[in-house]
Structure formats: structure tokens, C-alpha cells
Image 1 (cartoon, one colour):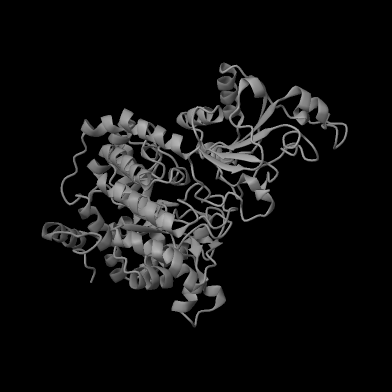
Image 2 (cartoon, one colour):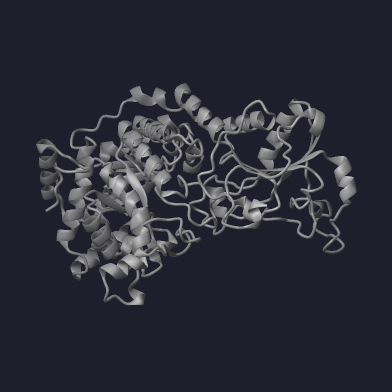
Length: 577
């Protein structure tokens, strides 16, 4: 029997009674629905909400962001018509902007870690939680506790505290404390650990290739600390860990290796029994390709619950998904005993957040969302995080009008996948370059934006070398080049996409002829594609406060204080030269 009176739930008698009485009153269909976290696209018209809840009977809700006021009304409407109060989750990885459109963007994990102060990890968790709670959320899909161990991994690139176990533990622990102090339940993710494989489990299966001993010394320690800190939930990634699955099941065959979200050895054997986790296990998004990489969805939904997951993140098709679980119960692949165990934990998490009593969502807390105090904290983090990641030989810093009046800014062209456009995560540095041009021109610099000679030729150069220009003319024309990159994380790679190889001035091959600064506003690993660069600056994002800080540091009004939490040299020899 599950002990809901102990960590992480710590329920009193009133709360425990509510859990058991609610469970006893539920129909089998209600229990099936309770194991899903539904996804709302922002429609909170009353008739729609009533119909949606009647169809899903979902236990939790995630949503696409609206403004704080709209989100509060949205969450009120859903709680009003839910028979059992909902767990409403916010993805506050970077702060309150993950809860609502006007929330405070504190910064991604790698940016916050670059300040070198764990207090900033606490602020990230606290600000995100307080703002999410103000709009009616009670659950955070944070902290991320993955390790940056493969610079090619596009999804963990900025969504990590770093490459060192001690840093991830220290920052993860403080972020968790901030979330709890802000009033939300927390979720550690992505078990059993992302950042080893170079692939993204949104698009394919992925593998954590660590040995048992390596895992124990890294992710084992990290998750042990999260559990000790009282994390209420763990998100199971669609990530395989063959070494541990084989250790816990020596008789298994190679073709029986499964991602953690479907693997009983990893969820029940490793996470629950070895590490002692008693909270809720939720899958990562179930429409990610990694979830269906080893079996059909019809089988995967039941396999996830049987393996130890208590909640499935998102429906694909409501009626179809519920029918898949219904069939699994009927044919014996999924027992009601296991379902009751999952629902007990879900209800216990709800009770721990006060949902055993009537839910009343007030307007009183809205003033905290995006408040001046939170924005000031975010701006301070921006100033302390901008990192001089590489500096070899004579540097053009600080830049002055007297020495570097004529500047060319080169925005690196990076295509944006269609899904990234849909969610507003657009790559490309043109807008950032235009902003920098305006700011630097205001300081007296003469600034020109680079235009690809291929574009000038309207895509019809005479031959492959037609875009080459005179080096001496280039030297006479410009005193300094700023190469600017903003390469997002939605895609199978996060690499620079050079339009003009073989001597085009987009690629910074001319560093011995014209002083050059390379500035990244997203991925910190671009030295792999621009190893000749002598001076590299990582900003981690392009918030206004970040660009403000960058300008002050470029012009010498402020010192660079950021510390790289990851290996910006990508383990490559030539990137250090």
C-alpha cells in the first residue's frame, strides 16, 4: 500500500481521508481519465470546457499561454466544471513567461547557471512559481536536471544547469526550493537523464549510454538529491538506459530495450525501489516520436501505466486513447490494482496542494505577474550571465568609436523548422542584428548589415566562386565585424547554416585580417562551426535586458562576469586555438 502520509505528500488525516473516499467513489472510466494530463489550446468558453471535461475526465491540465488575466479565467472555468479538482501545470523552465504571456522571463537554466550564483536558480524557481500560482496553477514541470554531456544535443543545449554534476545538483536543489517556497508542486525531468545522446526524443528514440556505475555517479546522485529535497513528481523521458535495464533484468533480450516512459525496470525497479521515489511519475509528452519508437500507441499507453507511470501527458485522440486503456484492462494487460495505485498518487498530489478543499481562485495575486521586482531580478541575472566564452590573443574589446568606427554586422542565416514558427521559437539573427545596428549607431559607430552576395546575385551567381571579394578592399572598408547567431532548439540539429562557403564573408575565416567578435544569443556551442573565432560571447537569449548588458560590456562600461557552465569548446582541439 502507498504511504501517502510520508514524503513527498506528507498528508494529514483529513487529506488522506479525502484521497481514499474520492478513490472509492470513482467509476472505472473516471479513473482512466484521471491518469491523463490534457492539453488546452486556450479555449475557455463554458460550454466547450464542460464538454471537454465530460469527454476526458482528465486529472491534469497543461495549456498554451494566454495573458495572466485570461489564464486565470481559463483555470477558473476548468476548476469550476471539473468533478475532481485539476492539477494545472505550468512549464516554468525560464520563469513566469512559461505560465502566461506577460510573466517574467528570468532566463533559461544555462543562462542562470552562468552567473555562478545558486541564489539565481532559487529566484528562477520562485518567480516562476509565484507567478504561476497567481493565475491558478498548482504544479510546475520544473526543474530540469539534465546534464550537458553532448554538445550536439539540440534540446538540452540551453535547458541545463551545465555539464558538471555538482552544478546541476546545487542549482536543481535551489530551483526546487524556490518552486516550493512559491507554492507549487515540482517535477524533476527528464528521467533517466537527457544530454548524453545527440538526438532529441521529440523526433526519435534516444539512448543514455552510461554504464551502471557512471549513471550512479551522475544522474543517480542528481535524482537522489531531488527526491531528498521532496520533489513531488518525476517526468519520465522517452530515453533508453540499456545498462540499468539489463542489470535489473539480466534475462532480457536486446529487442526488449525500452525508453524509460515504457520501462518497468527503470521506473519501478530503479526509480521507485532503488532510489525510493514515492511521488507521481508522469510521462513526457506522449505525442513525441520517442514514445512510439518501440510499439504502437495502442500498446504504449497501457505499457506506460504498467511500467510505473501514473499520468500520461496529453491525449492524441480522447476517445481512442481511453478505448486503448479500456481494452488493456479487458484483456488483462493492465490491472485495476495498478490503476488504483496510480490514481491514489494523483489524488495524493492534489491533496498536498490543497485541492481536497473547494478551489477558489482570486484576482488578488495578479499584480505579482511581471512585476517590477521580478523584472529587475531578471535584468540583474542578464547582466551577470553574459559570458566572454573565448578570448585568444589580442582582443578588440572594449570597442571604441576611435578604433572601430566602421562595423559590419553579419547575422548568420539559420532556417526555422515549421513547428518552431508555430510556437514562436523563431531562429535567425536579422532582428537582433538590426537592434544592435541601431544601438551602436546611437553611440557614434558607422554600422552596416551584411547582405549575402548570393542574395545580391538573386540566387544566380555565374559560378561557385562568384561571390568572393577582395580581402584588401574588405580590410579598407571595415574596422570590425560582429558575427551574430540565434540558432533555436526546435530541430534535429542546432548548428550554424553558412550560406556562402569557400571564402564568403559570412563565415569568419578572415580573423587574421579584420578584428571579429562572434556573439551567440542562444546555443552556447557555436565554436564547433566557427573554430577560428578568437573572441566568442555567449548571451544565451536576446531579451532586451540581455542586449542592454551586452552593449555595456562591448563598450567597456561593464566587465564580463559570466562563467561558462558547459564546455563551449565542444571537446575539440581546434576550438581552443
